[in-house]
Length: 287
Image (cartoon, rainbow, N blue to C red; front, side):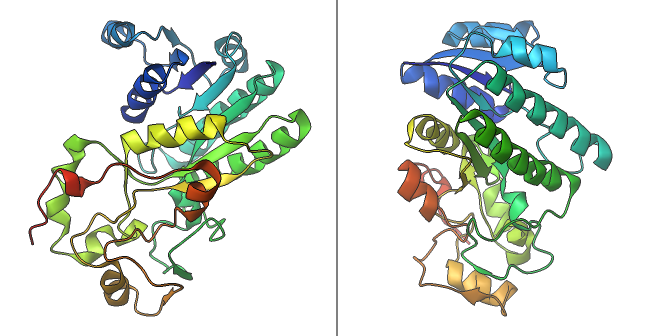
C-alpha cells in the first residue's frame, strides 16, 4: 500500500482519516501546524508520525511531501467567520497553492483534498436553483472561505493538467462525529435553523471512506464530488422541508423520505461512495 501524507491530521476530520488509512494498510505521515506533545502522543499510539509544518511556506510543504506517494490535504481554516475575511482567503490559498505545487514538484501520484459544499452557494440565503443540489450548481461562493475553495479548484485543474497528476476535490458537507449528533434534536423544531446547507451533514467516518476511495478510483484530471450523508439532519421528509422553506425551488426527481438534498450520485458512480453512517443509528427520531 502507498504512503499517504494527511495534512490537518490533528483536526476533527484529520484524526479519523488517519486512523482509517492505517486500518486499511496504508502508511501515513501526519502533518499539522499543531504538533504539541498530546498531538504527537495520540498519533504515535495509532502509528502515524506527526510532522509539524506550516504549509503557508512552500519549502515546508515540499519537505512535508518529500517521502510520500499521495496526499490527502485537509489543512485549511475550516469555516467562514473564524478569522477576518481576507486572512481566511489568503491563508487557505497559500496552503492550497503550496501543497498542490509541492505535490507536482515531488511527483506524487494523486492529490485528494477538501473543497467544500459552500462552493455551491451556501448559505442558501438566496435559494438554490434546483434540488437536489449537485456538482453543476457551481461556482457560487458567498464568502472568502468559499472563494478560497473555488479558486483552489481552478488552480488544481491547471496543475493537474500540467503535471498529469489527478487532483480530486471533495466538496465536504458539514462534518459530524457521534459527539456532534447530540445537538441534532435541537434543530428539529425550526426547519429554517439548518436551511443554510439544505439540512446536510456528513459523518467523519464517511469522509474518511471518501478520501480512501478517491485515492484509488480510476480518475484523471481534476474531478470534484459532493460528499454528504445519505440522509438529512432532520426528522421530517426532505420534500416537505424543501416545500416549506424553499417553495419556489424545483425538485428535479422523486426523493426517498429522508434523502439528502446534496446529491451524492456522482460520488457514488465514480468513487463507489456509499455512506455507512447516520445520526439515525445513534439517536431516536423524536419530535
